[in-house]
Length: 217
Length: 195
Ligand SMILES: [Zn+2]
Image (cartoon, rainbow over all chains, first blue to last red):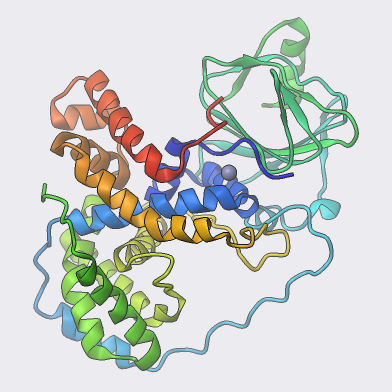
């Protein structure tokens, strides 16, 4: 089944502009790998950048710049790097995410953070928003929580029921501070997703508050 | 800000043709033509992204050398010369000014979902996407273009843009919303997102 829930214009444009943080860019790029529709939109967002480049005033260049560039063109270039060997078996996690994780699903080392919930924090130096893989056993309820900032979720395997929507592989949910929600993993297989949060989540309710230090999210 | 030029398409084709000639024949005259058109704009771009004039020229140099080396990857069916060169400059500026990797998808990855068998309308869609974006940009008011430029090119929050333009934050936000709203049609909508 094809992707039904896509990344927003806002995210797409800041990804194209090169102003989006690395964690959120990782989620956008991984969605693009799974979504031909958004790749067409991404090409249009790049075209906005091209049009703005055309519209910029022409700056004065030093006289030496062109000769210096021409001289560099005539230098022999190094041979192109060898094409990396690609795995051929069934791959669940697409690039660029797989490289950030250091391998596909089968090789991941999950850490239990709560009953039926596991995670892997993706370390991105210098990036404030936090990217993590989350794995919920089927049917698991995520504690009710609200956000101080934006939360992005990309489902990679299984399904996630959030309010009245069912998200499946490739689908993206984008929630902001106004949203209070209580998603749960759908039946069948475990739900595995990539989540990017701007700021720490705030959990509601006593049980959730007890779980917060455990989840460290 | 300069009026967005409503490039006659033959001019656009000349610039694309230059990149193709570099790929096919290492044509230095074609490169010079590209350089004269794009290098001064690239310097403006890198300056806007926060570099001083000397650094801006250094990175412009790097971007133009990269155009020469990677010309074979340019597909004139998929993008205009300006769009392709913008993506090179954008990637360089993310690397230099933000000091981060810019993750991107890999079309050769086995988990990559390829485009559907191109139906004729999809091909047309692609050919028209750039034109659509160009048309929309030409309908934006100078004020809208200005905030779009600031939010697209300069790493600024709405608050900083407001301060710089001497406008209330609300005005800046509504201008950005309006400009983005007009672009939405050209971007193919965002059905289902931002729920
Ligand atoms: Zn999509």
